[in-house]
Image 1 (spheres, helix red, strand yellow):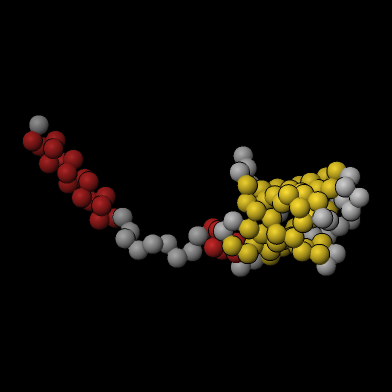
Image 2 (tube, one colour; image 1 turned 90 degrees about the vertical axis):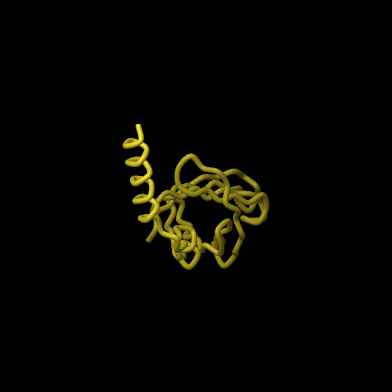
Length: 118
């Protein structure tokens, strides 16, 4: 029994020695902050998405910029706004270089389009 305890303790110490005490300097969110991507959507619009911090992104369409807030998503990243996109709410759901943009147009009519990074 003492041998098993000693072996377990030794194993724990070895694993502890492998653990880094230095925090990671680059996270996925931090890397995304400095980037922006331009997309081309099926309906012809070409939004640019810029990550401004860990929980917000800006979408620019036709020289109009709106701030979106990170929201829960089953997969990928989802940003939403209650106002701001064409003066109405909207949602940007992105996974990799593909995105679905749901919004209300200038007249308040709901629309959705698929977009791909350029």
